Image (cartoon, rainbow over all chains, first blue to last red; front, side, top):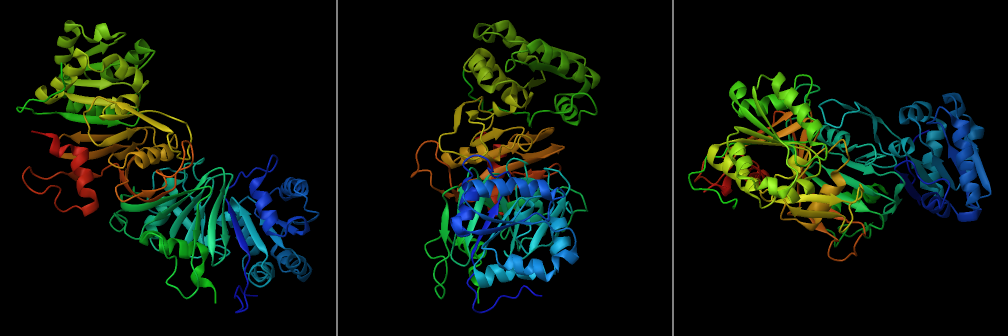
Amino acid sequence: MSRKQKSSSRPGHLVVVGGAEDREQDKPILREFARLSGGEKARIAVLTAASSIQDEIWEIYDKAFGDLGVEQRMPFVINSRDEANDPHRVEQLLGATGIYMTGGDQKRLLAMLGGTALDSALHRAFFEHGTCIGGTSAGASAMSGHMLAESLNDSIPQKGSVNLAAGLGFLHRVVIDQHFSARQRLGRLLAVVAQNPYLFGVGIDEDTALVIEYGKRFEVIGEGAVTVLDGRQMSSNFLTINHHEHLELIDVRLHLFPAGARYEAGEPGDEGCTGLPESLREIVSVITNRDYLS
Amino acid sequence: MSRKQKSSSRPGHLVVVGGAEDREQDKPILREFARLSGGEKARIAVLTAASSIQDEIWEIYDKAFGDLGVEQRMPFVINSRDEANDPHRVEQLLGATGIYMTGGDQKRLLAMLGGTALDSALHRAFFEHGTCIGGTSAGASAMSGHMLAESLNDSIPQKGSVNLAAGLGFLHRVVIDQHFSARQRLGRLLAVVAQNPYLFGVGIDEDTALVIEYGKRFEVIGEGAVTVLDGRQMSSNFLTINHHEHLELIDVRLHLFPAGARYEAGEPGDEGCTGLPESLREIVSVITNRDYLS
């Protein structure tokens, strides 16, 4: 029951959605997720464990994916860690070609799933079977190894105002935030970067997705943009102020990727991300997980 | 009727307020403005021309400054350019030790005042008499030479989504935006910087002020923070996309100054802003207007 990937890995796509994706009209993000999961032949599992109203959420996605022509749709209502260790559920999950993690509370999702057989199965599905993994809102935040767990709802970044927790670890060295523009989350993502300059802050707007072809490229689709904060060159007052005092930050690098932005990680063996501005190379390498494949 | 400053200039302070400043409780920002205007002996003129409900706005500030112990308070309700050229009003304004420009619409304020005798008088008051000039919301935006006039209310920066106009010109090489965090204005300030990399974007939060001692130092006071965007090292797709397409921006530098942040411009004759990180020197020099004094 580990997340270790095999050397024979052939991972699929990650579809990291900023919440509030269109589920009723044209549904471009869900459509793309379904396409990457095999289109009409996809077998899509909807993992609702982040939510406290799992049945309602399942109905919404059941209808949405049905409208998109996906015939095989499986609810994954999980209510306990025992259920998340049930070998029968594991077999079911491994039969999926796409797994979509809904919104709710990412802490609930990880408390339910973290370290269970289903957690391992998610990673086996992705790394061994090439299953497409999608996540929206809480399901998006849960995808990184360091997961944004909670924050003071304060647009002014304070020391100690943001707590991280252990996420699912499909993405490394990033923290994902969602509903980014709509909920004015620049402040809290700056607070993450101030305390964790090793991590890149990735803010995804509503109805917008970061589509990652693991190790190869990423692309932004949908209505909004993806904002990346890079604190590597930053200086701040973090070390000299007290808990809950306000942060002063100098030289945070900000990158804005609108829908249509697409970056290639380059071929294995080359120096990586050739042709990119120096400041973007490591970001593209990190977001695509270029260096995490064996 | 020009804005030219005399060589004998001894400018006062600018108090650039991000809107929604406390006018009823402790009023720390209005209190500081009153103090810089002479305290209880201040003669404060409230210039309401940006607003379409000037009498109501005057009453609010009349009470607020009265509560702060300022006995001499003058309404400056201006309804036409003729009034803004009235020598009697000019004399009145030159008698003030503090001039506070209220919120409303900065386009209205400039269309009423721009190029009038009252416009010149504002500059004479500031540069020759050391009168303190405050402005909140629209009154803050109006302070820069290039003024943010209007924008599509869209958090995703688009080419051509932001229009600048001519402001009052107390600040150079910056564009001021207000209600910055509360109204999710990162997107529109990024759009300004994308089109105008020569200008620094200065976003001021509500109940927060940038207090500038002209040529010498600046300080942030209040509840929120001041965000500065620097696009000098930025690369973008601006030149290759069409009107209303989404902007892709790489390497915007972001600086966050919370309340209490204070920067010194250094002495005239030195290289300026010594002891500051390289990337901040020009910003501090620009915001303090260090190089615009004769």
